[in-house]
Amino acid sequence: MAKEYVCLGIDISRTGLKIALADPSQKKIFKVDSLPASGDPLADTSIYASALSSWIRSNVQSKFESIAVSFPAGYGLIRTVEIPKEAKNATDYVQWEFSSAVETGKAGEILKIANAEKSDDYELDIAFYPNEKKAERATVTALKRKFIDSFCSPDVEKNGLRPACLTADIIATLNLLEVTEGLGSTVKCILKADDHSVIAVWGDGSGPLAIRTAEPSAEAIIKILESGFSQFSKAKRVVKFCGELTANKDFTDELIKQAAGLPQGIKISVWDAVSKFSLEKHGNFSKLSECIAAVGVTLNCV
Image (cartoon, rainbow, N blue to C red; front, side, top):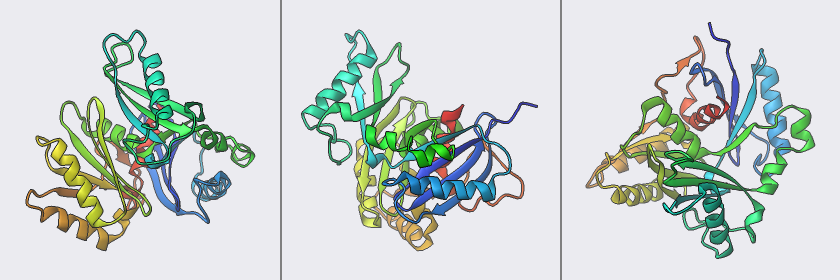
């Protein structure tokens, strides 16, 4: 039997932590949980460290190998970049394109957030499709360096809670969908709705194709879903719904009802099961739909 490689996946929001203890290599989930915080762990990583260390003491008996963290996509910058055939080096081209976009104030055209004054303020994570050697396009996730540096603070380091990687939540969920169900040339939609942020992504095997953000209301969510599906008219009007708001039954029922009642109905399904992953026997997985990004980010530990 292969040795377990247990990873702790954390999805951070402004109000708390969503946690998944999993072995991504063997595709097994041991535990999930939703943990409220005493403040905003995105703004103060000592809150992250305190809440997580307390949870680990009470819930984790054996050693885990690494920690992976996902964050709200709106907390950084996400861009899709088409790479011209004449580009000699894909990485150099993407870095140049991002720097140009930031300096000209266009870096927030996908997500409406403030730009840094300089591109050097950001650390880039680049995913190439189909691969780096034959790159046709790339997805760039950029975080401010001061945010990344905060996870190296004394409070985080002394508790051994420094993450091995930081990934945007919507990328973590799309990666999970690719691993569990496959994407290929089929465009699929994921909706992640938290108490303070909502984001929808349309993607296929080549990565994210379109991203929309909204306020956390049923009406605003319906609007961005209709906008996205109008861009992909051949895609099935089906949405996998995850995030904090799935715990709100009244909100979820109303959203599903409104989407289904559209002239061209949209079917929204709560993402409360993960195919190809086994679940620990006798575990409580009632909060799995809230913790999908936490499960997805553990795939970065493989």
